[in-house]
Image (cartoon, rainbow, N blue to C red; front, top):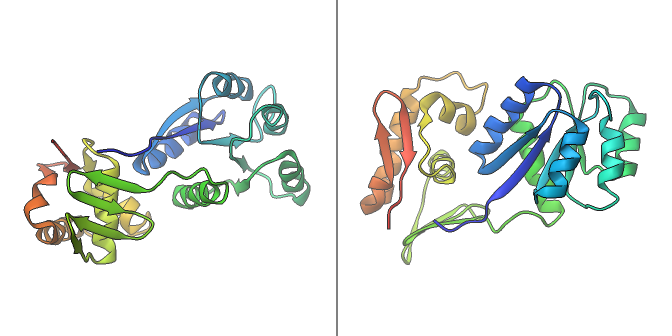
Length: 226
């Protein structure tokens, strides 16, 4: 597969929150690094190129506002700030310092990822969202699947399922993970829903059906070999 790798830095002193965001971001095709305080985030930004920064405001030592002001002296990386407060002053200060968006705690990880993708598109930082596996081509923004010169018309959920698996090539995704990320975290359905959609998706893919492999007792993975 040939696609652009997206890198995310998550700066928050709450380890469990960092892991939660990282889990959902990786399912969206991001490679994540974590920082437990503002200074560590600043140091990582000096050493590594990231596509977006998730920055908590309330951290020990430097807070998010101080970190953002320092970062903006030399970087225009898109920044989404996390806050447990909803005061208008805080948001205005963050925007004046150069924040691209705000998310208030507690938040839905899916909403955060939607905001991440919206910010990347708005700032022109989003990569060309095309996944290519041999003659299978997935145009994410256009919601178009092609095999060679043939267009494959997939129902919406099958398309979303194919994208999720393809974005996580070689990674086994459990049925529960697929339910949460494709059908929605609040979806209360039987995991057999995933199985039935995978079966239908394979039928639509025809000769390329073997790209989606069953990992018995666990879930599914997308596996392409030239």
